[in-house]
Structures are given as structure tokens and as C-alpha cells.
Image (cartoon, rainbow, N blue to C red; front, side, top):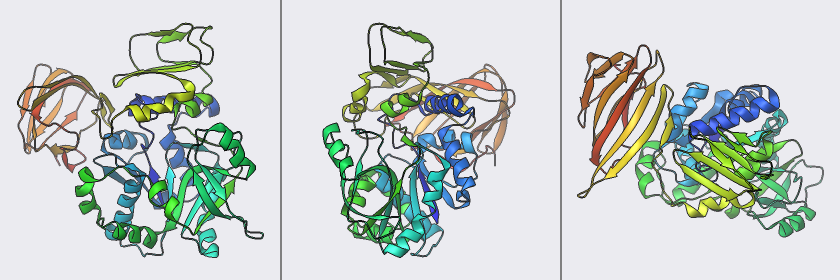
Amino acid sequence: MRVVILSGGSGKRLWPLSNGSRSKVFLRLLQDNYGKEESMIQRIRRQLEAAGLLGSAVIVTHASQTDSIQNHIGDRIPLLSEPHKRGTFHAVALATAYFHNSLNLHDDELIAVIPADMYAEQSFFHLLQQLPRALKESGAELGLIGCQPRSPSSQYGYIVPGKAFTKAPYTPISCFVEKPEESRAAALIARQALWNCGVFAFRLGFLVAALKERELPLDAGSLLARYPLLPVRSIDEEIAEQTRQAIVLPYDGMWNDLGSWPQLTAQLDSSQIGPGRVSQSSGGSFLVNELHCPVHLIDVPDVIVAASPDGILVASLSNADAIKQQLPEGDALPWYEEKRWGDVRTLDVVKAAGGMESWTRKVRMQPGTSTSYHVHARRRKIWTVLSGSGLFIRNGRERKAVPGTVLDIPCGTKHGMCSDTGMEWMEVQLGEQLTEDDTLRISMTCGS
């Protein structure tokens, strides 16, 4: 069985946390509860390895998260990078195209899709291993895992089972209900409904047929080229809700979806992360502050205040997920990015008349690290080194970079930096319609 790990689906629900800050919050959470300093993606990696599934796993994520993920888990798991966020269906479609065309897997190969932000015991992964047998015995096209609800909640989707098979560990699915009001959730639980864990299992040929039906390319490169024009679609609406022959395996262990503020804060043992203070009169409130300046909460109970370079969210904890409807579709400029070699913080964005844009950013590199060796087709970059030293490579030629060095990188120039002592520099990008997808990586290390 092949495993597809979907990373980044909760971006809007946990806005405005950057990838780096989100990892730190998860690390704090895991350290508090288990004494282990690991991020969520590291935990998933460890649990897959313990279940003997790591060697068959692949990660699908947005391009802005690739460096952060590699910084946490290295390059042992193949990583497929999406240039735009187009929903879980197209993320799974990308993995399907990779399995079908790049790896030439047989149509009968079993594929299991899991979210990176779930928080479960190892027994959950033991149940995951039972999905192939359940699909074979039942003859179903789609298999899911559903968690036994602990209380009525409007934060989860529900799987409503049909008539149970005699003595079978799985049940046919009658229908899906997406995040109902708590009163309806209670009625669904009375009908033995389960929380949808976001796990889907199917034969590779099943998704290949779905791609053909939607006239989507069956090779990853062609599909990536179509990404700018693709709509945002979830696998729930495109596949699960349209499939009649589907089964669910019930799970009765510890499981949480940490992809939203109510679920995440329910696991924290402190009401404050980052500088500032939550007053006693602000009972039930949480502060997650990535900024350097302190934030104080006084007489504001039951709210979430999350602050980062990408923005500040102030919302009632019960309705924080409404941010999904407030933010526009598409890809927003990340004001802070965690890289495998350091981090980048955007300081200023200017869009001048005539279409010319400029980004001003501060770049930091860790000692002994290297950026990729890459090229941009639509932007010119100017780097001014502030501190540290390194080796700059431009079109195969090396140059020592020290404080005061100014490096001009025109469009179409192959370039990269290797840091000796750790470095900082100011970066100005100039061009029309600057976008993060204007990067062609030649190699993961500079100069090669």
C-alpha cells in the first residue's frame, strides 16, 4: 500500500500562522504532552515508520512549505510540490499521476491518503493497515476511517453508516454530512455516525479513471502545468460524496484534527505562546504571538488572538474557522517563510503604475548550509550582504560574499549561495507580476 500525506490543507483555518510558527506551536504542544520535541510532520513520519509504511509514503504540499518540511524530516520521503493551492482533490490527483506515470504502478495498487495535521495514537496506523483487506473483502471502491465521536461538534464532518455487514469490522456508508450544527450532530451520533478523519483508501485505477473522466493529465508534469487554471476542489466533494460503493472502519482511540483553532487550543496546556499576557479576566482565551512586540489580552474571554507577519487574527474561539470565508481564494504572498537553510522575512511590497513590482526581504542562512542552485525567468534580484560570509555562485562562477558585497542577479541567471559562518542579506526583487512559482531549481545545492 502506498501512503499519500497531504500537508497544508489547514492554511486558512490556522491563518495567520506562518509555516515556521505553526511548526513551533506543534512542537510546543507535543513537548508539553509527551516530552518529545517533534513537529506534526515528524510525528507522522515516526508513526508511519513504526507501522512499516514509511518506505511507501509520498508527501504532497504547496511550494512554500517544501523547504520547511525538508528541514524537519530530510529528503527520505519523496515530496511533490504544488505551485498553487487547489484543494485536496487535485493534491491527490498529483500523487495519482506520479504513481501512474512516473512510477508505472499497476492499477490494482492500493493508495491511502492521510492528513499531516491529524494527531492520533499508533493504533490508528494499525487500523490504516487493515484498509486494503477491507476493500478486497467488501468489493468497495473507497474505504475511510471514522472516529467514534466524544461529543456533538460542528468542527467535524460526519460519516453516516448504512446497515452493518454481519461480523465484518467495516460498515457500508450511507451518506456524508459536512460540519452540521451541534443539535444535528447529536442526532447523527444517535444514528452511530462517525467523525470523518480525512483518510481515504482506493485502488490506483479508481483515481486514474476519475482523472480521465475530468480530462485531467495522467502525468505529473502536464498536470502541474494546468494548475493555474484548476478550480479549488476537495476529495470529499469530488470523490467521497460521489462514490456509492464505500465503506468505513470505526476507530475508538485517541484522534484529533489539529487543523483548526478550536482543536489546536484544546490541546494546549498554556493560554499564551509568544510575548504578551492573557489576563485572568480573559478566561478561555488564547494568545499565539509570532511577533517581537508583546500583545496583551484584558477582559476579552473566549477568543483567539494569533499574530504573525502575515497578519493578526482576533476571533471568538467558537467561530475562528469563519476566516476561511473572509480570505480570498488563491495564493497569498507569505511574509515569513521557514527554509531548510534558514528563513526569509518580507519587509515591503510595492506595486507601481505600469505593472512593475518590488519585494524587499531579509534573508538569514544558518552556518554550513546552501540554497538551491536555481533561476528565475521573470525577476531581477539584488542582494546586499549584511553579515557573515559565504560563497556566491552565478552561472557557474564563484565569488566570495562578505558584509558590503552587492550581488546583481538579472532574469535568467543561475545562482545560489553557500554559507560559511551564517549570513544575513537584504534582497530586492524587481519584475512584473512577481509570484513564488517563478523558480526553476537546477539542483538542491548551489554550484552543482
